[in-house]
Length: 432
Image (cartoon, rainbow, N blue to C red; front, top):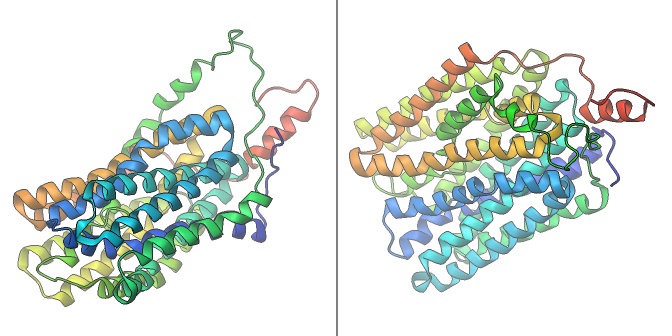
């Protein structure tokens, strides 16, 4: 298998990282303001509408473990290229349900959203693994935050187009646009992306061909368990803002009853806010350390969720809700990508696919719990308690980072692929 040498030039990153990332985010963003309206057309209440987002997140939750094994078994490139095709096919099937209107099957809608989440996760996990394979410690923060940053830019700007397209052409339109954009964006990767998996280690301890027993013991070595817990908690908080769609669903129903195009404009405006915050975060992580963005980001996210809870409790006007909406988006963008940067620092080189399989499962469990828990708490006690719960998870996550996770930035470290190539080409040299 030909292994890709480390590449960090602008053209390569633009075509294999930035372009697919923004297309995945844009495609998801196109559909976000449409889903509440589609659910209402089918006669589904607010709690049921949130299930559409939950099932999309369930797909991202179910995918990581099998995807991680496939990444280590088949290679990064094959899995990365397959993900967008699954996502596009699922989105076209959702468009079919949208065309059927009130006669469409809500169960079908949930299944297709599940598949879309699965495909999205395949691409994301593969690309993060490539970054871990080829990026030095002082490059990963920028690359990971650029990946998540441009994806969130697409996610937040897509609703503007999706909302107006739905109003002018029909609710099916954003899903067809989603499929087309994702497929077009992955084309350059077919031609310039090469396999980045490091060479396999010589089998010294296991003549039977089984993986070394120490691989899974890495998952319980400090600080990895603490990293997993923080990833879970952070994604409970931010899952309600991005993929979870809690704020979007809340805005679409009473007391605000915002239309898809209005929600689209509001979400789209956040794209301009996201760009400098996310990109600056990557620079800060690579220059000063990961904790310099993780701790402030979690604390600010918790405070902004408290603000949102207060607006729900007081029955505040739309203007106050919009102010809280902006504060929440600004805060969660501070932690966009830094959990995965932390993961690339501690992932064991011999089993990165499996590590990210566990890591993404934990993270997506948090993201899935976000709208599910909020919907349950909303039905039980109202939106105030739901947003209060999301704020608490951010505060607890910040405390764990402060007390249990040391700084993981290792200045001056070579790219892992470069280390691996150097070691394996030196006659008689030690294994990495």
